[in-house]
Image 1: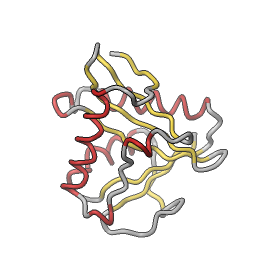
Image 2: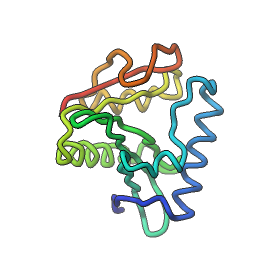
Image 3: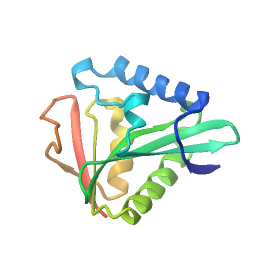
Length: 151
């Protein structure tokens, strides 16, 4: 299992992300969906990592630069067949280290408030994220929770 910076050009990661967006749309009302599509993830302000096992994508995550010292965690996902196997923890640890090395002092995120997102919220709590008010362009939304941590 390797964690690699991904240029998002491969068909495997495109399908993996397509499924991510499709699942988020099935769970969250469209006006509360904040998952970035493939084109947005290719933006210069985004660094994207894939967790690979050979040619298989096991997970992914990204950070989006908000300003010189604040970034947003985006697109955290683990393959359904590999949930609760430590992939998300390993990836989040990697991203936190990389974000700090890139000069960020704070990492924030938006995730869903529904029961489906409880494992994600527990993971973020385990890694020291605290609940916070909406940040950047987000607004209060009953379908969203916001979390942040200092690096």
